[in-house]
Image (tube, rainbow, N blue to C red; front, side):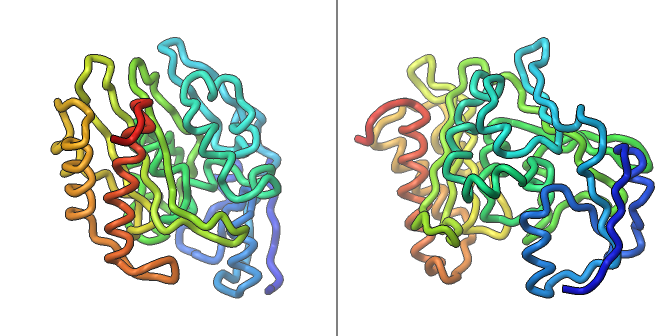
Length: 288
């Protein structure tokens, strides 16, 4: 690992001022769980790291909004989310997903903002937050903007964030009568990433599925919302026929890639199976 300067500003605004948009060797560090591995492997050699550990405590907070939604500071650790009573009320599916995200040592250090900004397509929370309709609040030298998380990712390990921008918080809207689930296919070995992840959110309170959201990750270069599968399912009762239609539409419309976790064809079959399973889990019904 090369030598580098560590800068520890005491405010969010000061951290923004320390960034160098024209110098890719200057990088923000939050929890550092992914960045330190990249540095140890020699993939990234920083000249300076801007640590966010000393910024205002409000950027680690979790608070209910008047409309029932949730605001989460970008510096909130994944472990804090896992044990948050507010999150368990608004989106219990996130709390459930966190229990199989990496290990407790990583969750104690990793932050929500860093998890999202890292843009690894195998991460668990991006597809799930997309299904929940969440967005990030982003602050930069030019001002603030809101970005739906489904629009945050531009490609493999790539976001639309500018180099002088930071995620300040994540907003999960109230879910009303929606139910959600997240499933992944993984060996659950300590070093393993999933071969596929599927997040779904549906409103099935009237006997038929309305406004389904189906998101695929891990098998693709970025989290992808599968509109073809959503259209195939929307307005139908959740039965064997509609489940098969949604699973087939998802598998046929997604471009998967081969890697050490399986071939592209194998991942398409996983998508077909896991979309059906995730939909049943969200609706609270057994597989037909």
